[in-house]
Amino acid sequence: MAGICKNTGIWAHAIGGIEDHIHALVELPPAMAVAKAVNLLKSNSSSFMSERGRFSWQEGYAAFSVSASNVPAVKRYVLNQAEHHRKISFEDEFLILLKKHGIEFDLKYVFD
Image (cartoon, rainbow, N blue to C red; front, side, top):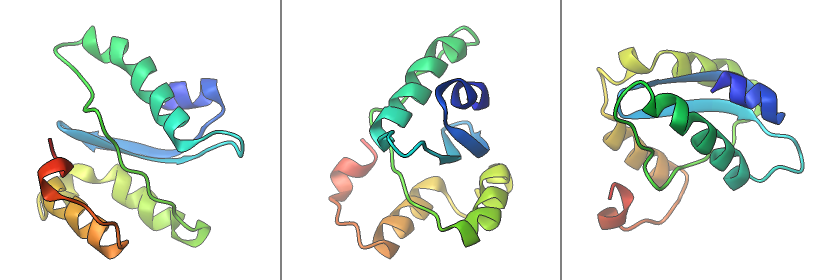
């Protein structure tokens, strides 16, 4: 994914994940929409991952902005996913983030 970022003008600060999800701390070019960046990452990584076993991306995604002063902390978080998710599940953490940022949601649609 870092190579995809490099080839598409996205600056990858950190990319990390575990079996069921990834986190990518990226900086987009000013004219690139978040949806375009996600599409580039998902579409260009799908064939690579599928060659290595059964793989598919979920339909949705979430994106949060990060202030420059928080980049080092978020980078550490992204690179330490396995350790982090031993303490809290992805699902629980995601719901906390949604609530913390005041994002309204219907739980029946969040993880489908």
